[in-house]
Image (cartoon, rainbow, N blue to C red; front, top):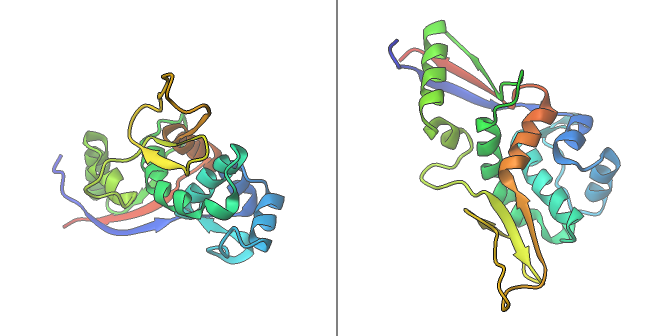
Length: 192
């Protein structure tokens, strides 16, 4: 099989408030409250709909809030972590759920899937992570601000922090795919 195809369009799927609550763990009432308090931007679509990138950022923020980090201060860490969450979501292997809906000529669709399975460059591109390595954790300790990490969160020694918190972005990506019950992106491909 010839591995030639051209990505014509990448479209983020929009999800409604109920799906958003399942994907992000922030209940529908919580979404409304965060919007009213100015912690959450206006929705991406009508009736509270949000696109995948916004949901990924919201999921990080919701978990950070659950761990004690105020939602009024979490928008930057959510936005910074969103690409990593999307990348890990795209690579998740969830039975019966494909995070990508690929449409186009059969040969181009086959070539796309072959390349996607062979390397992770396409996932990096879709997640808007070209040239960088995706993060695996959001981590913070004591009274520090959350920051992104590539590896282990272990910092145990006698001079280390007393309290640490972390969010596993790999598991969060998988959770988003499981809760979506369908594709996160629609990819239109064509022959070159």
